[in-house]
Image (cartoon, rainbow, N blue to C red; front, side, top):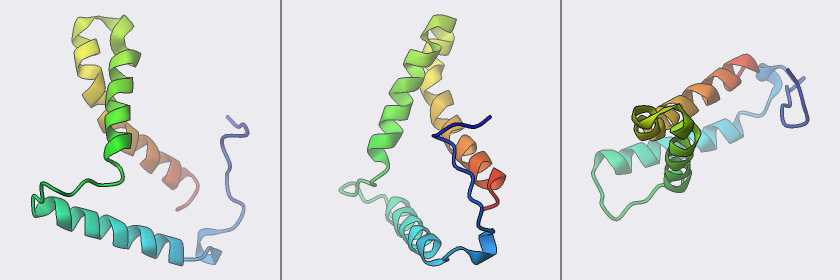
Length: 93
């Protein structure tokens, strides 16, 4: 399975720059800290993506019946990070 949307890096993971990962981990730690504090005024950058995935799930599961139409939003929200994890593991990150 390949295409222009699927780019598998040829550089081994140990030769890639760790700075992008460090910046991402720092942002994730900061986001989790803010969410754990239940700061009502805080909105993560990923909120819009999360909402979009949730609503897309309703539309994707609509043809499969009422129950899956209702549950489809949550199913898609839960599946999206797992798909991302699978993609990162597949490319060796």
